[in-house]
Length: 132
Image (cartoon, rainbow, N blue to C red; front, top):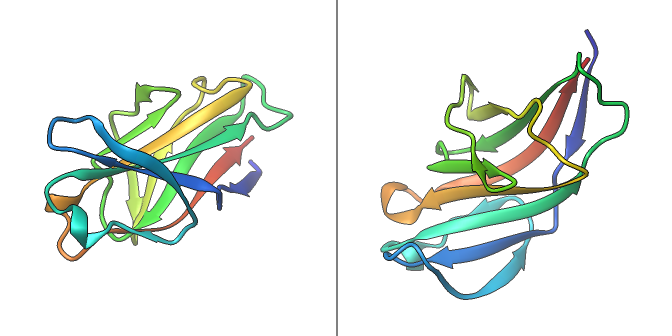
């Protein structure tokens, strides 16, 4: 089985999320690595990035989003759908199976609740892993 990685380097957008779960202010373009700001201790930060479906995907292809971070994210979504579990965690890498969940264009969302990250969480890098 062959494995191929596509880096999801940037640009990303960061959105501050208030205690009520609503977006506060405007989205800010950012790059990875991204550190959850200390100033947001009472809320959360939602990082989003779009990407196109890679070519050559078929029924035998396994797709995973892999996040290299100092803390496990509180939520990961693909196209607005929660990815409930992270079956693979190794040395700060968190892998999420998205097989069968991607479309022609996709939106990846990663949520870190600032108050739960001591010290501040850092999302170092992210990639789409293709096995097939």
